[in-house]
Image 1 (cartoon, one colour):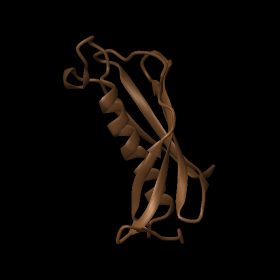
Image 2: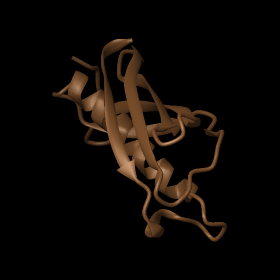
Image 3: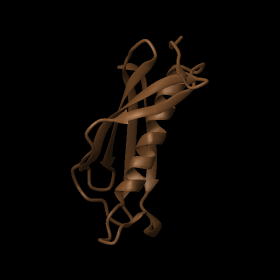
Length: 117
């Protein structure tokens, strides 16, 4: 792991739910993308990151209205122009694992990959 892990805490409100009454996966993905960007940018502040890809997205347990989740991210490794960021979430209310994936964040300028410094 490079750098420290980052954490976001979210109270699950009605606007975050899907038609089945559980957390909408799109919200989780939005938060995961934010957290990947934050971890990469805080470790490499002179970079201009874009998301290249997400690895397999594993939703392990549903999250309901009123639950509180904690989303974590950390830079796992770096390449020449990119870094790999692990992102996962737990349900702080129940203790269950909620979600895990990784993101590849690429440093770009003028639509070209540039080295991380």
